[in-house]
Amino acid sequence: MYKKLIESSLKKAAKVDKVELEIPANPAYGDFSTNIGLKKGNPKEIKKRLTKDKSLSQIVSKIEIKEGFINFWLSKEALINNLDKILKQKDNYGKDEIGKGKRVVIDYSSPNIAKHFSIGHLRSTIIGQAVYNLYTALGFDTVGDNHLGDWGTQFGMILSAIEEKRINPDSLTLNDLEEIYVAYSKKAKENPALKEKAKDWFKRLENKDKKARQIWEIVNKISLAEYQKIYDLLDIKIDYAYGESFYEDEMVKVISLARSKKLIKKSQGALIIDLGKDLPPAMLVKSDGTTTYLTRDLAAIDFRLKKWNPSLIIYEVGSEQKLHFRQVFKAAELLGWAKKTNFVHIAHGLVLIGGKKMSTRSGTTIKLEEILEKAIEKAAELLNSAKVVKNLNPKEKEAIIKDVGIGAVKYFDLMHHPESEINFDWNSIFNLKGNSGPYLQYTYARTQSIINKSQISNFKFQTNSNNQNTKPQNRLNSKNLELDNCLDFGAWNLEFNREELSLLRSLSQYQDILVNAAKNYSPNILCSYLFDLAQKYNTFYSKHRVLDISNKSSVISQFRLAITAATGTVLKNGFLLLGINAPEKM
Image (tube, rainbow, N blue to C red; front, side, top):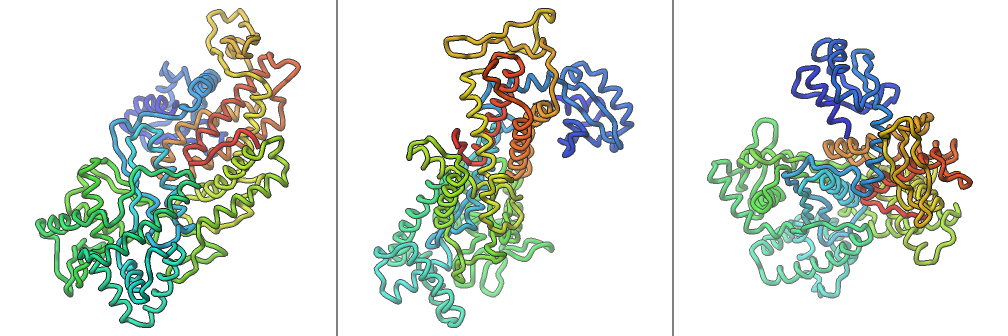
């Protein structure tokens, strides 16, 4: 919120069009810091101009030059105004309209049909959903597209096996389909003839062979029913789900467009696009006449541009596809699609179990459904052993345990940078005293418990008293215990202790954190912020009495209740953007 105002003043003072204003990792360097003084002009001269800026003086109490950096401290009034804003806006606090008028398409989740939803696909699903939520909160017109892997040679393997063994596809489960695929893959390594059979069946599928299509449709139906169970458990809702097969007609158009632009070359019977010196050629059509991943991804771009006209398309897909997407984006540029639309690949790292990579083809994958079920069991063990779930009816308890279990798995993933590899570790996931989902959820539940005990339904206060010599009224409305608009902390000349100041400063950074997380496609930035905020609140709580039952109408008690309410609001808002539920009781 305040970052924009300071940036505007900095641009004028430094006489530049762009400045980089950061939130320092060390609070000793202020609330915001810039190195503009090292790049443009004299830092002392820039500071001199800044001190004359009246609008800046209303929100900044101190400007300091240190090692060439210009550091800014927000004023007490600015911090209180932000506290007021949180309490008034509640669920809407942090939202912005910087993306107004811009549309973003986010391609995420994208499981492969006939295979179990693995823990590896969890990353694409929840990182993609968090990025979707961040962009939506910042005012972008956001479109989520689940690009299902329902096409390709792997289907040829399944079709070939089903036909060879004369299996009734209607009798199959997703377990059966995956076992068929794994077994066929292993045999095909030793028997090249099986690979050729699989290719032939996929060609029949693309050529709309009736039998191939019938089996394919049944396999799709079985798979999608199982995936929906996972999405329901994760509380994931994606706007559209177009499989690769959806783009059959678009692929023909893309090939025709590439040919008209003279981009296609023949190579050993295949059709390729030369992408220049920095990238290997990209194959559009194989020598047997079947299409490739690249053809289908280009067809999807063509469709998305025509349907939604986005300014940005984001792909949340594993890092093993980096080269593929470099080729896709370069091909899109050559086809003329990059003039109005930017393309970004969020390349998430692998999820390792015991330090080892998982693979469906080799049969070493772990089913996501099993992981989530175990997470709920472990959440029950944790909460029961800690005796934090008490005095609840069975239905409430079950809902909280589910929220904690699913939230723990999501947070553990999201707290890591998308590109990093993750070593799946149950002890870290359910560490109630460390950086974990349960720790943050418990902190939020603590804030709600305190507010409920206070019996205050709403907070109202003003920061600028018309008469600074008159102390404002300070009373409770006896009907609904709602604080009247009488908490003028400025008039009371309230002094903040170290822990209160630390919390107020953190709360003022929330909106800027959201922008930073979205700009860098990194939900982990928001996770780090929420963990830091929770730590600061718990330190504050352990050192100071928040609720004075004997005198809860005292200005100190009400001020600390206001901080508690604001902290709870920001934690909850942040959780929801991460796709994590915030139980009010634990």
